[in-house]
Image 1: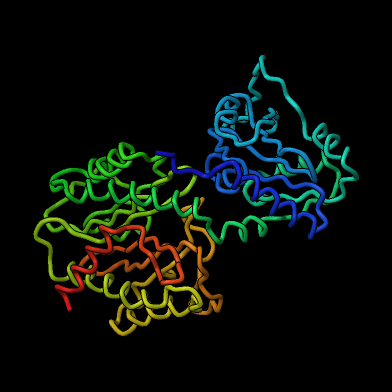
Image 2: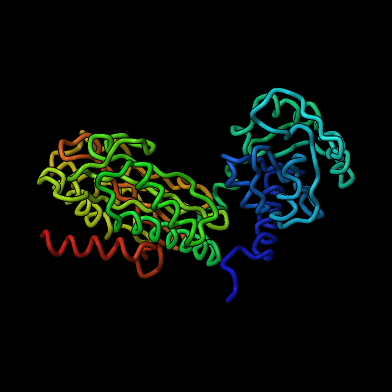
Amino acid sequence: MSKICIPKSEFEERIEKIRACMYNENIEAILVYGDEYRKENLRYVSNYWPIFERGAMLLGRSGQPIVLCAPEGEQVAREMSIWEDVRLIPDFLCVTVPDEIDYPLASYTSFRKLKEELQKDGELKRLGIVGMGDMSAALLQSIEDAFECELVDCAKILIELRMIKSENEIACIKEAARIAEAGFRAMMEADIIGKTERYAAGIAEGAARQAGAEDITFTVFGSGERSAKIVGRAENKIIEDGDMIMCALAVQYEGYVSTCELPYAVGRYSKETKHVIDVLIHASAAGLPYLKAGQPMKNFVGAVRDYFREAGLSEYDVYPPLHGIGCAEAESPYPDEHTKTPFAVGMVCNTDISLFGLKGGSNRIEEAFVITEEGPQTLFPFMREYFEAWLTENK
């Protein structure tokens, strides 16, 4: 059985698309930045994901892309990178300490040397930067001083390329969703009353790792009154009988992320808590018919928010109920009630339908869908079954 991943041929196609954009924008070279936290663009173009340190991919008008890293991460870069040309640069050393770290075995290049290499293909007047807002001001200044040319923010190029997913990307997101759902179900099926939130979160995270998670991007957790923490972390609070469980488990697989969040409560919970869960599930159902190719994105957002308005709950509706998902847990599109842009085949969207601050507790639904010609295709079959059963029982 072949591994679910992005093949080298697809990375090569991405590079050609980027070079076409460079030509259209009169840019002679482009540098795509990434680090441990803001990894998505660098992973998209090279498959490299730094640890502790910074990284980048430098692409000229011709030749193989150059992956830039720091000494500690060199072997990781060589293992992960789809491109063979990996070089060390001192500007990318450990991000958390101001000290100058001595690596006696390191063989460095420099931004100035890289500039000279690029100039063999002709004059370098404009250097595109993807991740300009993610890097430090000092690093950006070093790049500007060395390249001595106009720096152009090219984030839009990657945003647009990443918007529509290929079959391989969808397969990776689907696998991330499978793993996330396995972790969430393990926690949901466990007896967590009397245990701490951290214990419960550990069940989900451990099961997800066992199921093949490359990384747990985050676990948002809150129980009982703590469910109102919109993006709270699991604490040592004891989970009590009747508590609402607000847990979002974001799992990464081969650079792609999917988040599973299903609103539920443990033990003998109150009518108020059931009402919160019921409204969220019905709001999701209200929006679902508009989650299809050709529909303006505002229609989905409006349908969900109209349901909350009619239920008199708008004051608890804290942000738009949908965003894109892929190399980042939340990425474009992130529509509101004014977004006229239509959904397109190949988009992967994550519902983010939430209510925070109610008496019965707070929660949200995070369910990933692929936009297809036939309509939305859920990546969480167990969650969808749970919702359909709830709707049948609570008409």
